[in-house]
Length: 107
Image (tube, rainbow, N blue to C red; front, side):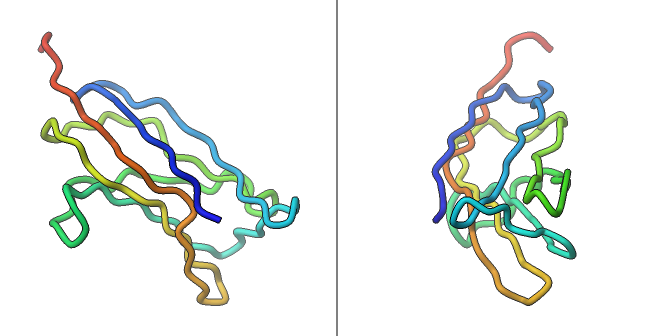
């Protein structure tokens, strides 16, 4: 089941690492060989505004993260999701929501 999670950050600031764990029926989903990707877009089908880097922290425990990184893109309210493709080829979207980038004042 997918979960909604919204983010707000300032343009050009360091976005802190966010950790996730995927469990199915209280058991961790094995992420061995999985591909995880995340894209920010103004709307579905729009050009990709940003693809944050993600890291599998512990495949057997179903743990991954959005890496700490500077997000230097236009201020806007973006939509995003995190999609996981397992080694078997099964594709699931586990997290989605709104990712708001606000203007920074000091440059």
